[in-house]
Image (cartoon, rainbow, N blue to C red; front, side, top):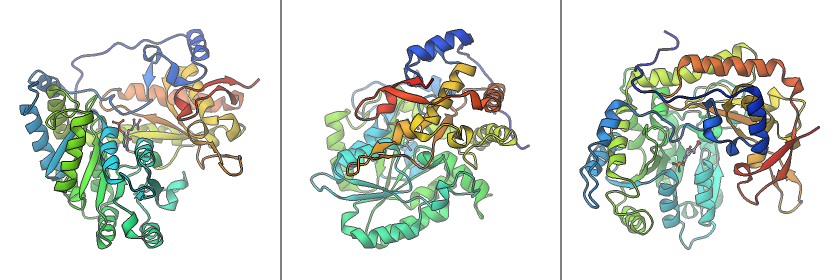
Length: 460
Ligand code: PLI
């Protein structure tokens, strides 16, 4: 079966309401044409993010009732730690309340008082980059070149370019690279997976130069499923075996459990390096809490432990990946330009191709997010000029990003396939009337991370 059905049935539901066209026009105007400003209750299908938006299972909710809220040594911590040992294999496990805190702990420790150190990655996610840069480091993206072409089909467009990594080590010197990283799957690069061969190659290259290797593991199970289905030699291996092998090459990882932990809040840092674990634990106590809860309730730790077990189920992953793929296929069949192949957690619309009559200076990605909302109550996120265009500090000229994307991130186990069909049909309708869509000008923008709070107005 090309698109395997849901391996679950629905036991409880959350009502969502459909607003009228007129209501949505008033709402988007009030929101300054920025979908971040829309109250979530006024959204019909919310594809803003797959982070913290998963539906938990009955098994996870039952686990929540077994929360042991002891300040120190909660039994749920030991279950959480056991699952992480089993899947990731790292010796020291440090819970955090979400992924960026794990990143903050790592980079504030390894970059402390040493400005100008370089962190290579396939593509840093924005919080990872921010944590590197805030701590005085230089975040360098070395993804393979084909990742920048939205139409090239390749099994592993999330791979790091090992030639670029070799050149970087030669250029800056291994002593200025405290760690190297891979983000699996590569969220900023279209949710594309990284192959086992590339993970192994990255590990060997970094270790040859004495550089530790860390993985951003947010979507590790989706990545493992792509390895199983796309990489020679892995078809008969279990997802657990593949995950074990992926992490066996690394010295540690950061993870936001809000993705493949199948929970609404949580994260962790894990490593084999005792000294690093000690330093990070000391800092954790300062900013998050005691080492056996790290900013989470006991019940949250239990939900993560159970989520990490469930996310490895192959029938779940087959359904998950194919739900996203089916949405992509419907759009491709109708000629809608999307980044190909479909990502693990999201479809990325190519806003430049969708709205070629709107120049980058008029935010085609924003125009598309507004059209999705006003036409059908769908919320997506712009990953284009509002997020990334910036003034060159020397010439003062505006630098635009290569790609203007709109991400439709699919929450895990949340929307039915008929709701996904609704999404596809409405995008196709918008595509058929795309020439009527106008560009936008900014009315208000903050100095940093302007996309969250900007207010815009349509051009007349
Ligand atoms: O949102 P956090 O702090 O739990 O996780 C940060 C984070 C780290 N790495 C990667 C690859 C992410 O995708 C990520 C968060 N992603 C969000 C919020 C998203 O919408 O994709």
